[in-house]
Length: 407
Image (tube, rainbow, N blue to C red; front, top):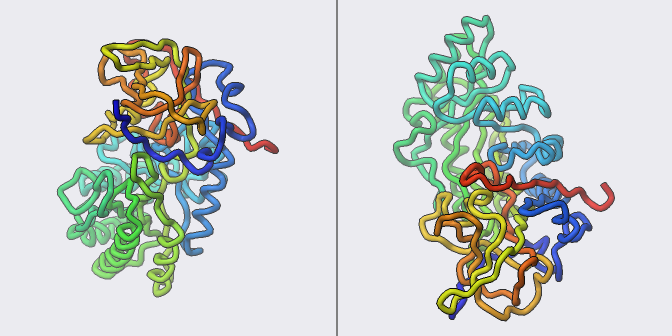
């Protein structure tokens, strides 16, 4: 049986014989129970540092909590970034523990009145998704006697080429169409709001360096045009994110140094405006590993199945059921024999009563036995919080932030 390819193991772990995080071996980290998500704190810190070194000085770094809201991870990353971006009242509460409200922005369609009120009372910036939301926020602010901090999320008239999830250049529930933005900005200022600028997000999960560079340049130009038409200088332009990570066979890492250099050239002509990039997946995705243990090895019609103790209830994305059209294999290895030569072709399935619960399809691995640990890499973003944990009532997944050896 010809094996199917798998995605690339992240550089932090690819050269290891057996998986270690923060100087600790995977067997010890999994001893308290599997399945478990392991997050490498040192790898996350290094990722933030690399990004800061690449970006121009006038560009801040924001962390999008939706990528991974695990409390210890959030506590570790919050001091390293300039702002936190949230998408619900629940995430707002989590962010407020770690940052002043002035460093928090709240995006997402369908914000309910109690969420708008909570953000306005706290002093967080609301990224408005529509004129109707703007009207409600202004009314709530007036009722509270507070000038709400309001930015306008723009639905741009372009998209991020090669993005896994396109957020611009089409009709969308996200943001205000660019042509209508200047009038809305003038209204916000006229009605006494504290206008905080623009949030412009064209797409996500792109590995095309040239496309990201092109989109950022277009975003800066769009912000300048909208500001001129509105007659007001934006205090902040959130350039969105879009930085992807390699998940699948053939994926190549985004060249963030090239992105930062190009953005520096674009912003060299701009003064009086602060900028930010809003990233989640790129900061934490490759620093996470999902570890699950083999509980059964079986053969059916000549095909080997390794049945493990966790599946789509914990890691929906790895099973191909979280936004991918064609199912492809995440990076996967036997956790204690990463570099060993493959001996057989196997399919790795979880314990759920559904054929969708397939973590790896016909991959080449060393011979595996019951009790061995399987590692699914690139699992630090959109893991437990994006998976149907209650489905079939299995044991909840553990999460562990692994500190650096000298932490």
